[in-house]
Structures are given as structure tokens and as C-alpha cells.
Length: 135
Image 1: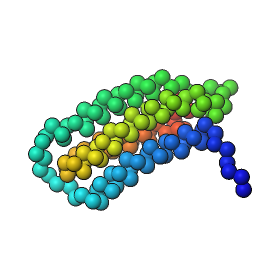
Image 2: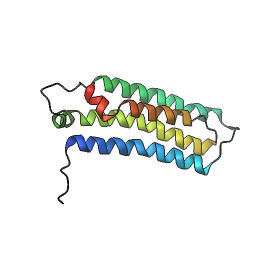
Image 3: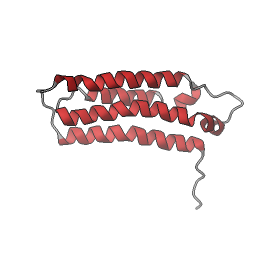
């Protein structure tokens, strides 16, 4: 059986699910390794993931508005050929804070930074490849 051709649409889906799996796996491992604690010695570190997330999520949403929906005359592969770089930038801006939130959970031991991870995963799910094409 010959290998399937790697089209831009398939490449986008592979990249998307790879970016989605990273924070999910990292947060799952973090939760399995470290039970939640309550004391935080440096409260500024507790708010850092939220500040980073606010900036990067806003950037991702701004770039998301610059991605045009697919027209009826355009094939899916043509659309992805033009917009894959923008979509990848949006997904990366949502994935970064999600990973950072999980890392801060490991660093601080409090579950609050995992809220950023959860919001990042929701943002990734709301901007899946199919939803980007539809506009």
C-alpha cells in the first residue's frame, strides 16, 4: 500500500492535533505526579500565567480575525495552502499559555495555573481546522 499524499489540509490536521495533545499530555502527567497543594510562597508567580495568557490569547484572537473563510470556488487544499501559516500562528498562541500553565502548576504546586491550561485547550478546540475553514 503506497503512503498517502500529504496534502496541506492533512498537514494542518496533523499539526493541530499535535499542538492539542501537548498541553493535554503535560497537564495529565503534572496532575499524576504532583498532588495539589495550597501554599504559594511567591504570589506574583501565581498571576504570571494569567497575564501571559491574556496577551497571547488576545493576539491569537486578533490573528484569527484575519483568516478569511473558504469561498465556494476554493478547494480545501488551496485554502490551507494560503492560510496554514496564519492558522499555525493562532494555534501556537493558544498552546503556549496552556503549556505554561501546566509548567507553573508543577512549579508552584497549586491548581490555579491549570485554569490557564484549560482555557488554552478550549481556545484550541474552538479554533479547530474545520471551524477555521468555515469562518
